[in-house]
Image 1: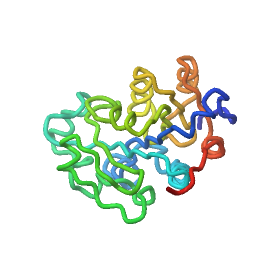
Image 2: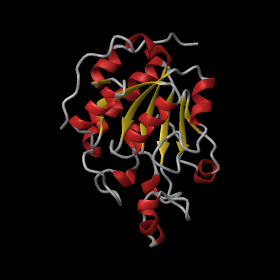
Image 3: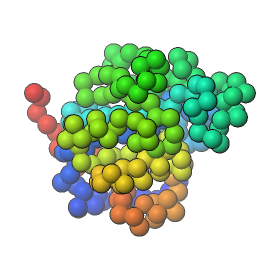
Image 4: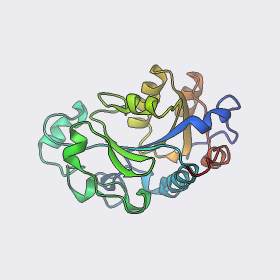
Length: 221
């Protein structure tokens, strides 16, 4: 397990009120018992659950960014595997769904037809699902447009397998001039060198406890 800083960067703490939580690839097929389990992802689910609860209480935006493998629109390293018929996050399958404990109460099942067209799917108030065709949550998606309409200036990143999609999303967000925060105990696959790399490019890392302590809870509207 990677070590992470305990205190939130003082320059980003005041920006939490205009933040959104991006939860990357936390789908049934990528946890223990799924078709393609990613080591460590099941372990971080309770931490992600606490983050989600805090963001829901704060009434701040949450985006569940998911993979759906169908046809040829698949990242190159997995294209042959998917073409061979591997049953990994196939549209409409049980394995493609968001892990149940991370879903908001009353959330509908993912709608692959809508998601694959690039549309957002409403899961609850202030909470959506969005499909990404490649590693970064910003690549060929409407995420940037959606976040700017919501007034988001800071993205907080959690989820599955840091070396791939969360890491690419960190770069995508930074390229678009968002402030970025990595929640180091809420992402599987993260290692000390990843934290060092993020900090070197100006992306702070903090624990989930520190993040939740710095959320500004908005009164109901």
